[in-house]
Length: 91
Image (cartoon, rainbow, N blue to C red; front, top):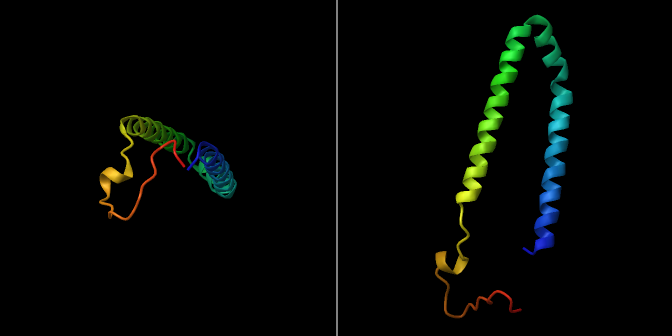
């Protein structure tokens, strides 16, 4: 995957994820408002717990991404002799 492909894939993932969040929010809004009206303390408690959960997940994801190292595919998979893997920088 070239740099441009990676950038486009990242943008598409971001847009689709954002659309999914917006749709979920719109669909869940009536239920959230009903729950807020019935039990305001519980609503804010759950909101706080969800915020902590997302913050923890975000931190763990960043730590995981920083500790992952790229390993060339040829080092992992045994390749038959007739398969030639082009070196980086050469077509």
